[in-house]
Amino acid sequence: MKKIFISSDHAGYKLKEIIKIYLIKKKMRFEDLGPKNDSSVDYPDYAHKVAKKVKLNKSNVGILVCGSGTGMNIAANKHKNVRAAQCFNLKSTKLSRLHNDANIITLGSRLISKKNALRFIGVFLNTKFDGGRHLRRVKKI
Image (cartoon, rainbow, N blue to C red):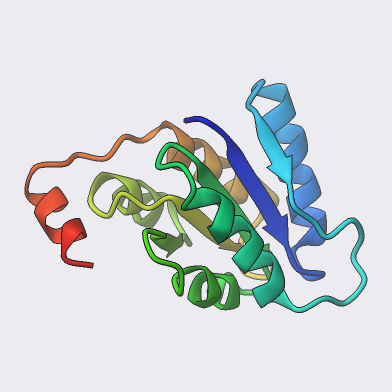
């Protein structure tokens, strides 16, 4: 992975800050694209920031956090060559990388625990795309 880009909206801000501490402890390169506090913001603005960075280099990945994970997911997937996956358990997270070559994980801060969010991020960042028959399918997206 070249670089991790992370962002949230106001609902995901606190979880984003926890994720940043996790990334620092793991010595992973990342860039926080905002927001800088939990004041109300519009989630698409931040999803677009991360998606634009991720699509610049195929080794870049993104982490997006909002209240449900859904809004960020929808907005990020509007970008060509972005495959954002809303992850809600370990299996969905692992399969998003193995089968779909997801390059952005979206998380719902109101739906998952901090502990699970960090577990999902670890799986997402450490799981490689299987390729093979899955590559054929990803190319059709």
